[in-house]
Image (cartoon, rainbow, N blue to C red; front, side, top):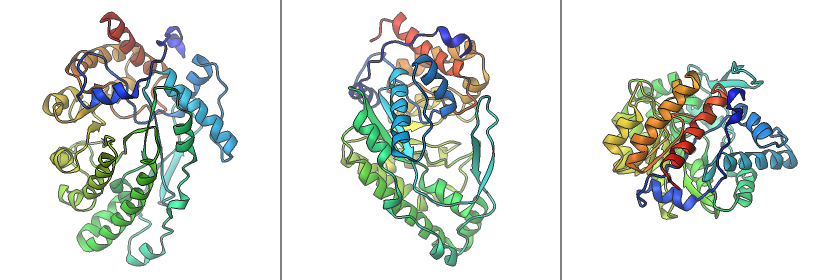
Length: 371
């Protein structure tokens, strides 16, 4: 952990109710909770074994290894100061993948990403022959184990991993989807609706869990300058499902947060007014800094994370500390804000930088007598 080994985080005091009140705008004051979308095992492991002094267990196929892995998983989120554990799992939805070794130091994993040119479904025949899973194929054991074993005060945040647009563009490929939008929109609708129906089944099960506090899916719909497909296509095939998922969450009195990378300004009014998201996640300074997003929309939606990944992954610890302090003073000072990475905490984020972000928040609270 390099020079970060001297960092001692405060005793955990999870309070999921306070977390929700702050992000709903119901509580005033300067306390800033933490938020993360995903924290990679490569970052988590040295902290579990070093800072927490626990034995790391890889997530295997047996229930015993999974229980041991998720016990560490829960203890990590608790010890780092989160008010919740966030976990996601996806249904088995086959797609063509490109695979390469993860280049992050200390990682033995592989990175995979969807083939952008060769879809698994490019025709109605392939749609009919695709091995669509049933809800029985979704393994609820991990999320049920987490829900059952949360420390007092903590909540559960969960979702189906990957949104309707992501899976649509992965299964059909970006290239195949683009052609189909022009040549066979009925096929696009059929794939989107099949995906949405499966995900709805997952959400209905998750919403029965008694410690669930937020539905928080990811659905990357943009790139640096625009949405990946036209806003009209997103409004037709993707956003209606987000509206449905959000309505289900709201029926259960639970907020619906959304992670979406890229420039999605063209559909942001739809997300706020039609889908009715309660929190927006994923910010990049080169697109729209989180401070500016909050200035424009912070009175309408919770603002989540925003510490640019270029700083968190590529900056010095001092860079990370300065940026964290700036976010706490600006976004944190305005309220309805949670501190965290602009995207996620991937394997290539130095453990020291991650800890410095947490430590800067703890020091800020201490200096300002915030509890």
